[in-house]
Image (cartoon, rainbow over all chains, first blue to last red; front, side):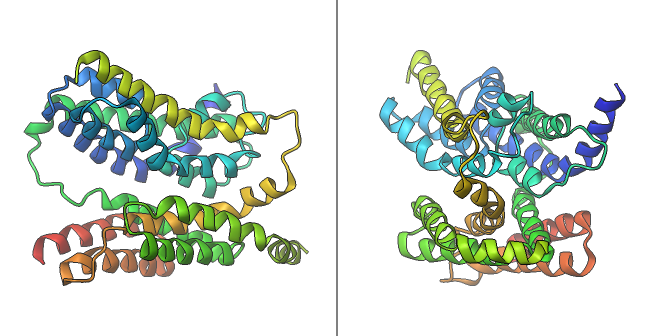
Length: 234
Length: 107
C-alpha cells in the first residue's frame, strides 16, 4: 500500500499540466462528437480504446465522411506515426515493467513528454510511477470527453485558446532539457530539421519527412555525440 | 455512414494507433539486447522530439498578417524566457496560456 501511495504522490504533480490540457481538449472533443450526432457512449469508448488526442479529432471528420477502410488506416498512419518515435525512445525504459502493455497503449504525446523528462524519485517503484502517470493522463482525457459529450453545449465560458497549455508544456520541457545540457545538438536538430521540413513540405505533410530526417541526422551524428556523452560522464 | 461502418472505422483507428505504438517493442523484445543504435536513439531522441513537438504545435503560424504569428510565437517566447528565469511550472504554463488567450482576443 505504501509503495502504491508513494508512486501516486510522485506521479500526480507531474500530470497536473496534462490535466489542464486534457480536460479542455477532451471537452472540446466531446462537444464536437456529440454535435456530429454521436451519443456520449461513443466519446467514452473512443477515449478508452483509442486514446490519441489529435487523432480522435480527425475521427470526427472520418465519421462524417464516406466510409473508407484504407483511407482511415492511411490517415491514422500519417497522424500517429510520431508515436512510433516515442516507442523507440522508450524501448529500454519500459523494459521489465509489469504494466508495459498498458504503458505502450497509453503512449500519447503528453504522457511521453512527462515520462521522457521525469526522473523517478529515489525509493519510488518505477513501474507504478510510470503506470500512474499514464493512467492519470487517460483518466483526465476520458473525464474531459464525458463532460464535453454530456454537457458541452452548456459550458458557460469561452475557452478558445486554452489548448495552448500543451504547447506551453512542450516548451517548458524543451527549456528544461536544454538547461540540463545533455542534448543541445539533438534539441537544436529537432527544431531546425522540423522547421526545414515545414517550409519544404507544408503544414499538411511535414511531420513524417521531419521524423525520417531527424533519425538520419542523429544516426549520422552517433559517433561524435556519444563521444560528447562520454566526456560529460567523465 | 452506418453504425457498423462507424464502428469499423473506429476499430481501425484504434488498431493502427496501437500498432504504431507497439511495433518497436515487438521487433526488439526484452530477451534480446536492444541494438546499440536504438539505445543511443533512446537517449538522444527525447531532446529532438520535444523540439519537433513545439514546432508541430506552431505549424499553423502564418506571416501574412500579424494575427497569424504574433499570439503563438510571442506566447512561446514568453514561456521560454519566464521558465528560464523563474523555473516555475505553474507560472510558465498559466502565464503563457493566459497571454495566448488574451492575444487571440484583442488582436
